[in-house]
Length: 101
Length: 132
Image (cartoon, rainbow over all chains, first blue to last red; front, side):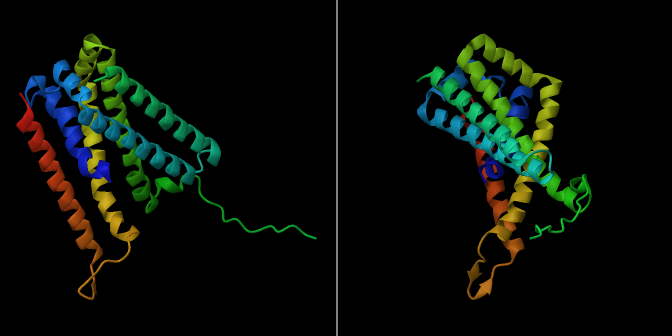
């Protein structure tokens, strides 16, 4: 649901508009701005929610699709997909904690 | 006693690559775009936590043709995801009865897409408004 609502805008802004400077200034995602955003509790929360929910959304869909494709044993597919998502979640928490406030 | 041997209908290995199942496969494949974009963002956050030099490497990667083409694919996947998500939504929720009439599924899809469009405009507006 979240990806459906905010995904297209986020990809357009951070992946296309900001790097090319079309529609946005070049320092839209400068180190200082990104740092200030990630240090603010609300910014940190937004980053955490977007990254982690997108990861679990992708992992869930990939797991279910591979299961339906009979790409492997159900539990090994589940284990690989959810373990990867779990590890990435821990990395996200670790990085956001390192950035501090 | 004889063991039960239920008939298991054989399933073609590549059933998911054929119509009409290909539509399902492509719809679920948008999850790869969502995950891929999350990984790019996560790489950015990890670089941000590492320091300014690492972060600049990430910013330079975003400017590369590789990254730009990747994000065009992500954008296509995200838009396909938004569309298919709201196509499925009325099929997975209880029927909405308004004034004694069942709200048609296409109206719910249209409503969802309208909310997504409003959200898109809002986020782009906030980004442009708050930039230095």
